[in-house]
Structures are given as structure tokens and as C-alpha cells.
Length: 126
Image (cartoon, rainbow, N blue to C red; front, side):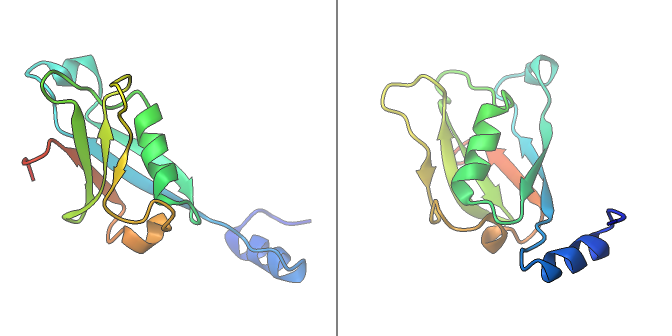
């Protein structure tokens, strides 16, 4: 019986030729969209993703978390890691709006994370 420790799970994975997959815990912060925004919702979020997750999966997790807040004319927010733009997320429901990727949408998240933190900022704000 496996006792559930990472070492034991890796050992079992090696025996059965499947790979143990760890999770990445990523802290996501966002800029407030207006003066009382911090009262409407949190300004930070923790996301757990499998280590083999793609950039588009990270963007989806952030976008679907009901975490981002938008106010006119701010209808797109940029996601950075260690000063590097990864993608831009538009407000939900905007006509023809889609996530814009500055890195490959199918790239692994771990390729671009220099630290386990994503900062969502308004364009021109970083």
C-alpha cells in the first residue's frame, strides 16, 4: 500500500511506467479597477494547476475564477510573470473578444514562470 508521500508515489509511478505529476501553486494578483474595487472582490487568488498545464489553461483558470474586475474603458487586462507579458484577457461578453497570447498558447506554464506569481495589470501600468 502506498503511504501517499511524493517519494512513494514516484516509486509506484516508475514501477508502472507512468509519471507522477505534481501541482503548481500560483499566486495571482490584480490591480483594482476602481477606488472601491478591493471591497467588491479579492485582489489576489491562489491557483493550483498540474505541472504539465498549458498557458491557455492558466488563462482559462484566471478568466473563469470570477476574480478579474473590469470597468469602462478598461476592458482588457494583461497577465505578467516576472515582468514578462504572457497573455491579455478581455472582459467577458465583449463582441469578438478573445484572449491574446504573447507567448505560445500551447507552451507549458512552467517554461514561462520565473516565479510562482502572476500579476494582472492594466495595459501601460507595468
